[in-house]
Amino acid sequence: MRIKHSAIIKLELPSVREAQIFFEALKPETMSPATPRSHVRIERRNSLLLLFFEASDTTALRASLNSYLSWLHLLKSVIDALKEYE
Figure 1 (tube, rainbow, N blue to C red):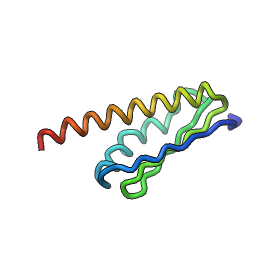
Figure 2 (figure 1 turned 60 degrees about the vertical axis):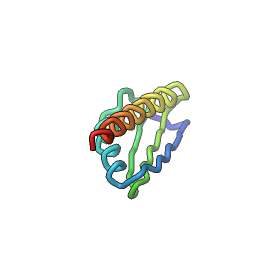
Figure 3 (figure 1 turned 135 degrees about the vertical axis):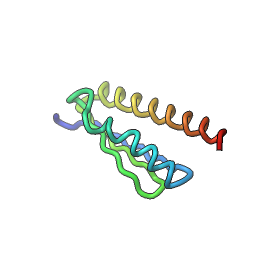
Figure 4 (figure 1 turned 180 degrees about the horizontal axis):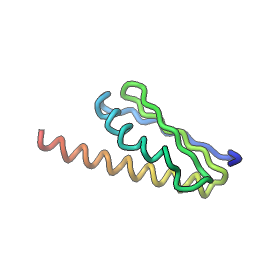
């Protein structure tokens, strides 16, 4: 894959624990890309979550970003719902 387009998402989470939960939930998705046109790498630095997107074209980049943003939104919704039971 020839990289032409890239993006980075930096997400500061409220705690190291939440960052670890997000990291562990998303890590498997980075291991087997849905398409050879894009690749995503994820890192956690304390409570900071970093997602690095690389794609061969803007369509693939947008699709990857949309997928991960949807998953991030879902994870936040689940964590917020679980906090109500603490």
